[in-house]
Image 1: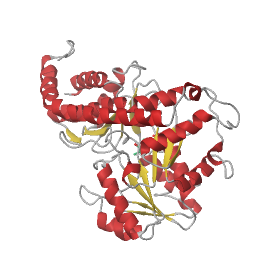
Image 2: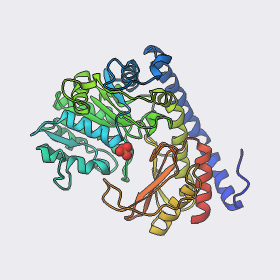
Image 3: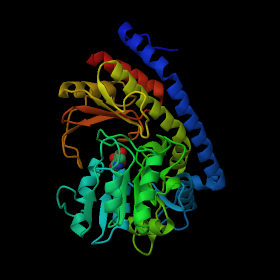
Image 4: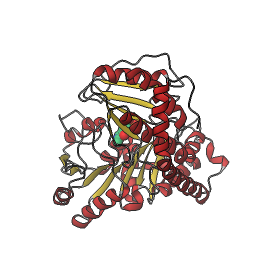
Length: 413
Ligand SMILES: *Cc1c(COP(=O)(O)O)cnc(C)c1O
C-alpha cells in the first residue's frame, strides 16, 4: 500500500495500523457506493436524460427541458413524487428556508424532532431571538425535542407531533456532537409522527446525508427532503444549487415560494447550462464514498493519536462529517491551517477565526476548494468554543484527504 515518503516514521506506522484496521470498513463503503451508482444511472436512463438537456436557457426559461428533467431526475433519486432541483438555490440554508416558508403558515408549529437544527437555521426559524423575517416573526411557533442520550426522544416526539404542522428531522450531526441518523431512524420517526398526526409534514434536512446509504429519506416515509448541491448531491462538480424533493402538493408550495405564486416551478433560466449539475449528480455516489472514507479515516487516525472523535472508529457514518475534539484553540487553528496548507486551491492562505454570517460563535474555516465553500471538498471548520472541535468533511479523493490529515497530524502531535 502506498504511503507517501515525506512523512516521519511514527506517522507512517500509525497510518499503516489505521489503514489495515479500516480495510473491511472501506469494503462496506464501496458496496454502498456501487449500489448507488447503479441506482443513479438507472434514474438517468428512466428520465431519458439527453445531450440537449445540458444547455441552458435565458429570461423566464419557459419550457427549459433541461430544468424540468433535473427536477424529475432528483425526484426519482430521492424516492419522491416530485422535486425542485435548481441552480437558483444559493445554499442548503436557502433551500431549507424556501421549503420551511413554503410549508408553514402563521399559527402553525414547527417541531424540531432531533434537537436544535443546524446553526444557520436558528435565525431562519427565530429560535433564540425574533429575527426580522424569521418564521417566528411571521407567527410560526417553534418547539423542540432534544436527543435523549444517544437517540431521538421518541416518546416526546410522539407527544409533541400531535400539534405540529411540520416535523423537522436532521440526518447529519451538523455542528453538534450527536450521532448522525440513518434512514431507519428517519423511518421510525416518520411512522410515529404519521401515526399520531397523518397531516404532519415530515421534513428531512438531508444535507451531508445523500448516498451514505442505499436509500434516501423519501424511500422511508419522509414527506419533504432538502439538500445542497455543493455537498454530497452535487458530486463536487455542481457549482451551486440545491433541491427540495417530496410529495407533489408540498413541492408545489415550495415552488411558489422559490419563484412566485402562479409561476411556481414553471420558470427559471440558467444561461450557462445544466451540464455540471447533471454530471455532478451522476458522480455523487462515487465522490460521496471518497468523502465517507475520509471521514472514517479521520476518526480512526485522530483516535489513534489520542484525541476524542465523533463518530468513534467503528461507529456508523450516515453523513460525511467527523468531529474531532482538539481541546485547545491553538490545536483547532493548527488543524485548520494544516488542512488548508494541503488543499489543491489556496494552499498558501492561513485561515483565521471570523464572525461568519449566520453563526453564533466565531468560526475558523479551512476550505481550499474549487467551488467556493463546497464542503463535499475537503474542508474543516469549527466554532471557537469548548471543546474546540474541528468538524471535518469531504474530499473529492480519499488519498488527498489521507495525505492532508497525515501532514496535519505531523504539526499537532
Ligand atoms: C451544511 C448544512 C446546512 C446548510 O447548508 P449551507 O449550504 O451551508 O447553507 C444545513 N443543514 C445541515 C445539516 C448542513 O450540514
